[in-house]
Every structure is written in C-alpha cells, then in structure tokens.
Image (cartoon, rainbow, N blue to C red; front, side, top):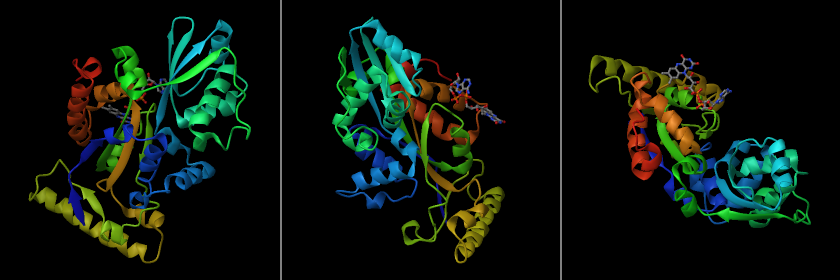
Amino acid sequence: MKVIPASFEIQDDLDRQSLAVRIEACGRICYKSEDKIEAGSTEPFIEKILKHGHNSVTEMAVITLRIKIDSEKLAAQFFNCQPRFVQIDRHGRDELLITGSVRAYRELYREHGNVKLIKAITGYLAKKQPLFFKDIVPKRGVIPQSGVIVEKVSLAEVDELPADSLAKHRYLGVKFYTNRAVTHEIVRHRPCSYLQESQRYCRYSEDKFDSQVTFIKPMFYKEGSEDYKLWQQAMEDTEKIYLQLLETSSPQAARTVLPNSCKTEIIVYCNLLEWLHIFKLRTTPAAEPSMREVMIPLLKEFAERYPSVFGGDVV
Ligand SMILES: Cc1cc2nc3c(=O)[nH]c(=O)nc-3n(C[C@H](O)[C@H](O)[C@H](O)COP(=O)(O)OP(=O)(O)OC[C@H]3O[C@@H](n4cnc5c(N)ncnc54)[C@H](O)[C@@H]3O)c2cc1C
C-alpha cells in the first residue's frame, strides 16, 4: 500500500486550452486514463461521452458570451424561459453577459430551441464548436437570427470584470487528492460540477496503480504513534482483502471493502462566488479538519489571485 498526503492543484493550465482539450483532460480522471491522451484522442472521447450520456463531463468548460439585442422583446422571451445553470448580467437595455458550460448551452437549446436569443447563441456556438453541437442542431445549421449579435468574451476580459461580475463569470477548477470522507462532503455543494476517480472502473491491482491501493495520510494521527500503527494495520488488512476479492470479482464489487481513507482524485469546477461560499463553510473551526487541511491553503492561493473577491475576511 501507498500512503500520500492530501494536496490540490488549481487547474490554470487547462484554462489556456481549448474547450475540447479541457473536457477530455477532466473526463479521463474518472477512468484514470490520462495516459491515453494523444493526438486524435479528443474527438472520439467526447463523442463517446455525449453518446453515453456521461453529461457531467461537458460541464467542465464554460464560455462567456456578450449578446447584443435590439429589442426588449428578445430579452423578455429569453428570461421567460428561466434559463438554468447559466450566469447572466444585464448591462443596460441592449447587452447581456452570459456564462455557461457546454452542457448548459446544449440543454438550453434542447429545452428552448424556439427562443430567438437561444437560437442565436446555439448558431454561434455550433459554428465555433461543432463537435459539441453536431448531434443536436440541424445539418444545415441554425438559421441566423436578426436583431441579435453574439460574441465570445475572452478569459483575459473576464478577469478584468468588476468584482461582482468577476465572481459570477470566472470559473476555476481545482483537482484535489484527498480521502473519500472529504469528497463525500465536498459534493454537497450543489452549484459546482464534479468529476471523480471511479472505484467502479479503476482496478487497483493493475500495473498503472503499482498493483496497490493508495491511502491518504490521516492528519489526526502522528506517524509512529500507537493510533497511527492501528490505522496502518487496518489499511494493510483491507488492501489484502480487496486484492483477494479482485481475483474473483469486479472492481465495483471489491470496492465495497475500501475505507474512507482511500485516496481519490476529484475535480471541483465552479465560479468564484461559489468558491467563496465553500471557503466560508469549509475553513472555519467547525469544519472537518481534513477538509480544512486543503481548503485553508487553497483559500490563500485564491486570495492572491483574486484579492477583490477573496481578499477580505473570509474566515
Ligand atoms: C460544519 C458543517 C457540518 C455539517 N454537518 C452535516 C451533517 O451532519 N449532515 C449533513 O447531511 N450535512 C452536513 N453538512 C452539510 C451542509 O448541510 C450543506 O449541505 C453543505 O455545507 C453545502 O452547503 P450549502 O447547502 O450552504 O450550499 P451549496 O450547495 O454550496 O449551495 C450554495 C448556495 O446555493 C443556494 N442553494 C442551492 N441549492 C439550494 C436549494 N435546493 N434550495 C435553496 N437554496 C439552494 C443556497 O443559497 C446556498 O447558499 C455540514 C456542513 C458543515 C459546513
């Protein structure tokens, strides 16, 4: 067995990638198949994801759009359909700023494809990102809509927005290497998107896992103490039983013996406003200590990057 400390990575590198690259990189965490990323792997991976309805993978990339409209009727029709899972700012009468994930835009079109503004958005996105829309838009494309202009807002421009808008429209992904008890708590935060290493698909007896189970070092017990030794013994025994069960049963069956201390990787992707809410709840003395172990240093990094949102007294 392997024991590692809890840690996290802010996924800045993925912010500089295309939507498709970003989505493949995140999606493969479930299967721990990042080693399969190569030239030409992205498109088939995404097609498969869409076909199988593993839709949360397409939540892992957002696009911000500036929409110019020439009539109030267009805005009213749009708001009447109560668009879900998108962030919207209204700037005066004739401009909207909208941020949504690939999934949010796809489902807006599926559910309200007759709304002019949504047709215009989908027409724009389907042209720029055909991979994500070719299965839902007509082959001839979406008919252009008069009175609506759609343009992409760059990430650099989003980063320059005033604090209120920045907090809504700037999304940031963090990959945590933590134990299963912590991820069980993190996923209670509903406005986030998540992808997590799957114990159903990962077979820890395989070479790529060094044929062993990885556990997160418990921050409660000092290494070498009697308590730590007891914990270590429990993990060793569990690993032995898990590996034995794998000889005759599937990973999803064998995983039923795996404990909370098991290492898992989870990507949490949400806007800065939700991160602020998470930090308010998960860095205080009332929060679970293993959660605080990762959230307190993470908050420090966020405060350095976005002082206008996180610079104040969060804790
Ligand atoms: C110290 C601590 C102890 C806890 N103990 C327990 C426990 O013993 N058992 C347990 O089950 N859970 C427990 N929890 C989990 C807790 O109850 C919440 O589920 C979790 O913290 C998610 O936070 P949230 O609900 O505020 O907001 P999020 O899900 O992060 O949502 C963000 C915001 O969205 C809004 N929102 C989202 N969905 C809804 C909705 N359906 N209706 C209305 N508003 C919504 C709210 O304004 C909310 O503030 C604990 C959490 C903490 C921090």
